Image (cartoon, rainbow, N blue to C red; front, side):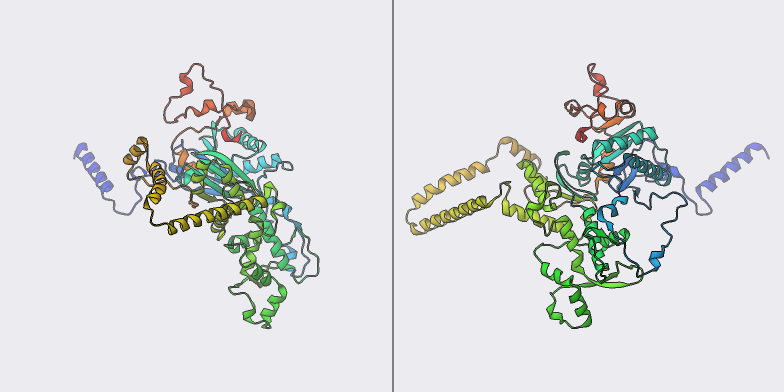
Length: 574
């Protein structure tokens, strides 16, 4: 047998083995169709991902979300609490203390502010903030993200940061300096959180209500631009503190020790679990207030448990639930009325029990803050934003919070209208105007009823109104042409309160970044290391005229000989 037939027979057997495998096997990677969540060509698996895919980081007061562009959700969420900041070999979180074994030990009280401070990365009030510690926490979190989740080289791809536009400049400078000094990122792009939440909802204009950890931020976005921002400290941190105070009173109701006014003795993990599982919001502040006070009375609860009080003497609809005891969650349970878990939400977010004169501009209730933000917008922008209200943040997950906020804002509009003028004299004047309008309508009806034999006069009086009505219905030729061209288009909803769901700021940034468009605020490494934030230009006119497409090599600034190639701007972060 010659060598040629042997080689041909070997090739035939190899081809037969490749076409018809004898056992189940995994197909080759080239045959897979790797598609992104948003329809791109990027792979959802990090090992098969394109090196040009940008990394998106969303910073918050407590959490850091990270992932690649083109995905609909982040790959990981990293916290900055004490448990996440432990070194290797530090097992203090799993060591049982002696105080845990002693049920009757004396509780140790802490101030509510110090009780929640260890969970935060930063605070907007940077007077007592250690920026060096913030820098170390950011560096550790990013190293953990790349080594455990992203599994790529840090600094090899473009980085996109999603940050609120009201972040202080020292914090922004700390974040950028840490990223540029620790890793060799070629450029970093900044995207505003509220605008990205609007883009994730498929909208161009919206009113974004961010019920975050430290602050509640209301942002009016119109055509992807932030026009008005309102802030209040009534957010989730204040809610956790109020819930901790309520649980402390329940845990020490049988104790003779004096409880400090701002003291908390329960564990923070237990309090956060109660907030996530049991916190809820009433539909109206005036309802069930007396029943809640009755349910919180320990004497009534003990009488009900012993059967001395009849069931009819309690308010209808009262529900008792069994929860782990705040003083000893691992061994005992206690009966608590469900209405008591709504009172911290009322006090923290809606300022129940506080007069309007006692509230400053920084601690306005959520519904008042939304109303004031809408009131400060122009009428046409206000009509677009009020019909597209987006709730984001951890506080938006509380049961009933969205419906309650929408109801309260509508009641404020019905009471005051879109006017910032308040006072007793203004209310009296409005009442007089309403009485005059009622009297005039009554006179017109009486005149038409008493003189039906003069149709000419009625026709003459009705002619001006019909003429005005016809004039209002007449449209110009441009509007008629647009309506003929867009017969299948949906009508533009405006001037009605309506809620819209969104995928969140991170998903919006992922969608916008996958379009491969260079943003307005893109900071290059060399320019920032030379001058820092002081090198940013405050002239935004030159940056609004063009948007550079990263998919092509054309840059309008290079085509103009007099263009300033070294200028960059902070945009909304100025």
